[in-house]
Image (tube, rainbow, N blue to C red; front, top):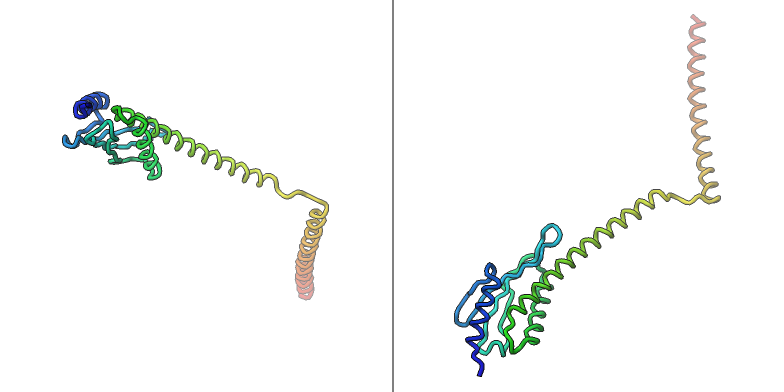
Length: 190
């Protein structure tokens, strides 16, 4: 017959020595404790942190322990659901053996994967923005392709604008000449 209490005590001692800074006992009966798991630092020293709460059931390790995410930092809800699913999968695979260390290690690996995914998403977004900026710059330098039709259309508009400018200048010159003639006539009349 398995001595569940003895196995639980031994595992608890081992877990406490492995995670001295992140391990906290919440209650003795039933045995409940938390372990804080932090990812490796990502870009800009950003980390993802999860505090997992485990509670031993009477027949642990022949039955899976209870667990929940006690607190989380920089973790999206969808990723939290993924971690809970991972815990369930790992617990079923390790049924009959003490498994808390295995569960915590699996969560640690998952958090590191998430940090890498976030980094990759940011790099992809940066690359997309750079490509969009390059395309916008190309459009500026490309301009309009000159064809015979485009050129003839532009030339007709240009010649109309120039003719209009010439007419305006000619009118201005005529008005100035008329003003000079009047002044000369006035001067001679006196």
